[in-house]
Structures are given as C-alpha cells and as structure tokens.
Length: 366
Image (cartoon, rainbow, N blue to C red; front, side, top):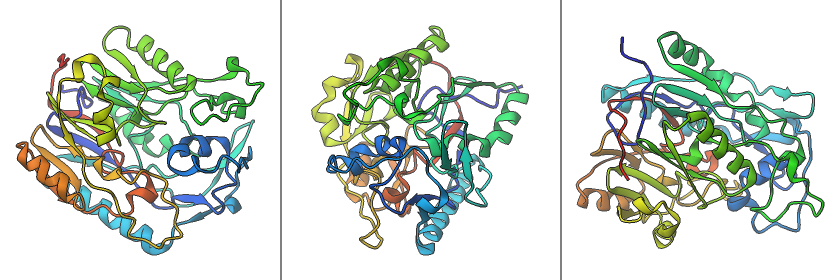
C-alpha cells in the first residue's frame, strides 16, 4: 500500500495537500498591548519602529482582540475556496482543517490566550519523508491550533505514516530569547529558553533542510530536529530573517531559487551548495486592498510566497506581474491566482497549504 505521506522537496509533482481555513481570525485591538509571543513573532514587520512602547502582558482575553471587517474575511474565504477548486482541477487531493466556529479563550496552568483558526497551516508542521512532525509553536494563541487537523493526522497514521509531536514549551515570558529584537532583559536567564520553531522556518531540498534560526529558541529547535532525524536528513542553519524563510527564498526546481533582491545580495548566507543556483528575483510588492487603518502584519513581499505544483507550474498571486513574466522567461508556467489580504492574514499560497504527498524519492541536490 502506498504511504499517504511522502514529501522531500518543495517542487515535485503535488498529489495531496491541506489548505488552511481562516474564518474567525482575530487581531489585537491595540497592537501595542500584546503578549511577548505576538510581539516577537511580528517584530520585524510591526514592532521594529516601536522600541519605546514595550507594553506586553502575560494573559490575553477575548476582549483584547477583534476580527477583521466582514468584507475582508469573506474575500479571503472566497479566494481560498477558489484555490481549493484550482488544486482539485489539477488532480490534487485537497483536505481542509475543521473550522474554528467560535473564538474561544484557551488556558494552560501558566497563561491565557485566544484560539486561532488553522489558516497558515504550513507553520506548525514539518512533513519529511513519511513523517508528519507537529512543531512547538512560536505564539501562545496557536498552542491548540493543530487540533483542527487531528482527524487527518490520525487517518494518515492509520494508513502508515509516522506522526511525531516535538516537545511542547511552557511559553512563559522567560522562555523567549528576544535577542533578535534586542529586547532581552538585562538579567535574562538563558537556561530558561525553550525549543520553539515553525515548519515555515524550513525549506526542503531532498536530503537537505535549510532552516532559519536567529535566536536560541530556533537553534534549540534545529538541534532537536537534527537529532530526531538521526542522519536521514541534514539540517543547515541560516540567519536570514526573524522567523519564516519562505517569504525570502523558495526553491522552484533543482538549480533554481525564487528570492527577494535583499536575499540575492546576501546569498553568501546560504549553504555553499546553493549559492551557485540560478535566482529569479521577486520584483513585486503586495498592496493591501483594504482600509488604511488595518496594520499589515506581513512583509510587503508576501506574494513571493508561491506554491509549486510541479517543477514547471507555480501558483502565484495575480498581482505579481513582473515576477510572472520572469518565471515565464525562465521556462516556468505561472498560474496567476487571486489571494487578497495576504499581508493581513500573514500568508500567501505557500503558508496557506501543507504538502502531504508529492511524487518523488529522496535525492541529494547540493
């Protein structure tokens, strides 16, 4: 029987995928009054210019948050449904998370927060070979998010996949290494830093994984991942951005990367074997399409967050006109597709999907 889970790269022919569900996404009423995990996760795009407003709280409650206006939520949902239909028309099996039907408060013995839908489904999972790994969250509000696809995980396990849950962090304030933002307390106790990393900090190149790791939480995660994989894969640590790497660099096929200009200029940060790969420069900035008072949580280059169906076809935001032309010149077949409000929901096509099975075998590419 064919294993239901089989992933080694970002580009081999896609056979099955989970597509996220964004309804009931919440955001802070006051972006300056958040918990440490939210501030650190969105530091580079939101808080870099607000060092003088270190207003953080341990517990977050439903009254601290609000939803986006109904029009924004409906437009995002419409585009995600269109993505599902597009993938199915390509013969790809699509699964969905359970919707978050309400906005419940969640609690551990140490803190309170508010639950999130499983929208950017790639973030909290690593799919490698025949194994799905639930990664230890970077944000408290996402602590129980994975429960929304547990039914699919159980089904994959029953059909032969391996299913692993990485160590779950306590996520007290002292758990977070804030060295990237320069906000560690003077008396910081480094022994309390915990393993925390997202799957979206990693990109897959067959037997090699390139992982963005810029603080001790990430580096502990890289060490755990390498030790867990036991030599089946090589984990290469890089320091590129605050958290997720897939808004800065994505492989499209062996020998070709899609990168931001800044990433191309600093390609010496990549493993040596990747530095000679051809690079297509992402040349388009994302526009908000919404009222100006909404704070963009993601980079203006979020549309480079593309999804490869196979080594030729690439699903890309239909606003990225210059990059679409560059892909065509390089021999790719871009599939321009509408996905509105990516900066508000902090996710493009790559974030909104989790590859479950591609038609491929493990190989070494660099």
